[in-house]
Image (cartoon, rainbow, N blue to C red; front, side):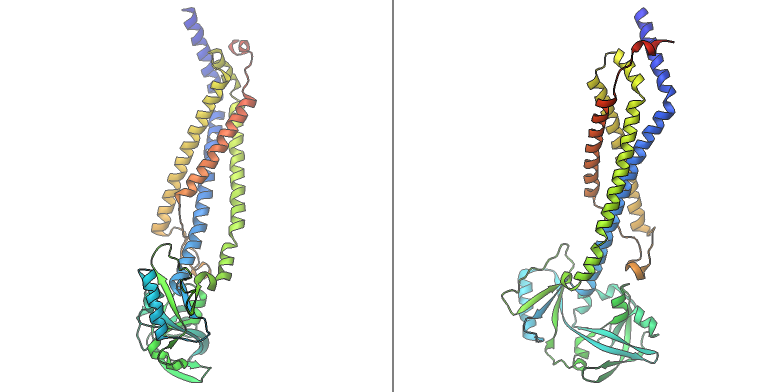
Length: 394
């Protein structure tokens, strides 16, 4: 009976000590949890947005310009016989790809409201699919004997559907009176302001190309992770991929990676410092409680194990909460375009997100290892046992 009263007295003192620090312990746990949520949501979302931006821009460039272009290595135009050879090689090597003949030249487009230097792209019957122009046409439709102009060019020169305009080839002084059948919009300035499209059969003579001549073959594909190897190395052709054509643009696009990674590293360090502070204060201000549990026979190794389990539990809960918040944000953004951005600047109308669960798993593993090491280190350094007589004294 005396022993039961003794344990009851000690338990009552332990509860009293715990309740005295209840608000402080709650604050410490909240700081720990909020640091975890902040670290995960900030780093994973920023990485997903950065990767999404690069992925969407690269896909848009490939859709508009093609994945690769095949030229003659003799600095002469390709012939229809070359096109037959190229198609044979491609069909033997790849499936589900699109290709078109292309002629590209600089000309002058003139209307009653002014003139503008533009690039004219002439393609064959498959060109609309290769350049995915159906996805970008905002007004009108493609006609074989008419041209398609960009939205910025149409706005600058007040061009409307079915308007008649003049094309001037300064290389041979040819002039062509044509109709505008469609307007496209890509949100990429070089295309919307300085590029027009037309059918190769209707305008080849305007550029002084014979009936069977063209500049190159453009290849594109809807396949994921599509790649063109140098399959023409033993033939009279050379392959130029979109990465070769836009190398300077890609350098600019990836130039933001290092500053973003430095910022994310700084966020990770700040979050880790907050987590470390929470763990240290939790251990430091529970020394009295530790002494009471020590009276019941717990060893220091068992104390370390208890705090380790507690911190891992909070960490897993915080990680799960972060994952739910990230998935909710990704769903809302992809479904409703919660955050919009200027199309003329970023070439996209809304913030793109490419969420990969591997980002989350990688960060989860690193932060978990850090928390285990920090808990173990601080537990060894801070867990001490005071004189029990001072705690049971009224």
